[in-house]
Image (cartoon, rainbow, N blue to C red; front, side):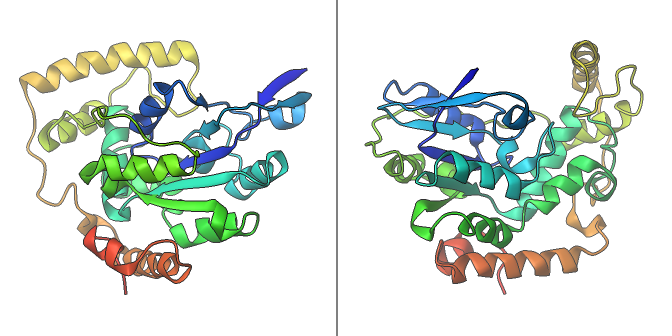
Length: 291
């Protein structure tokens, strides 16, 4: 029999929306317990007998795979249904990010990690599971409507990654309100920054075509070790030499259907406003696409 702590709060971080930094702050707070189980996104839900364990302090489940599917590929609607069965009174915190910037950030992250098929931006976005999965979770209105099928609006809190960057104190004050706690930290972890220039990243896209350990997201452990060694060698090489990318290599202008995608972003962002989660002015101030 497996014991599972019953979460009071579910933190759904869109990948590349500061989840690692947020989790670091939460882990360092002795007043609460952060869990990052795969119980809600994996086969354990069916395969193992579990007992929900109550706690008299806040339990927060935080994991990017709650929405991205990750290794297990459990659909988001099924994950939310599992949330509700576990705790219908839980609060939901979801952190969003300007979609075009978030997608480009994820593309660069996948270059560094040399996932299979990460060549040009277009190839990654349209011809890899990683790119298509990430694009599909950037329609935020759909995400919120899925959540509202199980939870009342009052239990759902929307925060913006851009506020985390510009005003972390304000961001965490709002975040902690859902935990029923006062935010007390005055020092914030450095957010993950891509340490490579675009020239170095472009060079990596070329080097990554030659690999002994071509990595997929589901790679075996020994495969991942070999991949890491291989990448360290490549990182050393791009410090010595780098190629100059085309001006549009890291640009949405290379994407056929860009205008159609951007129009969909405008519609879905307007839905966030219409649902009453974020003001139009706040989205506009942070560069979100709107009609």
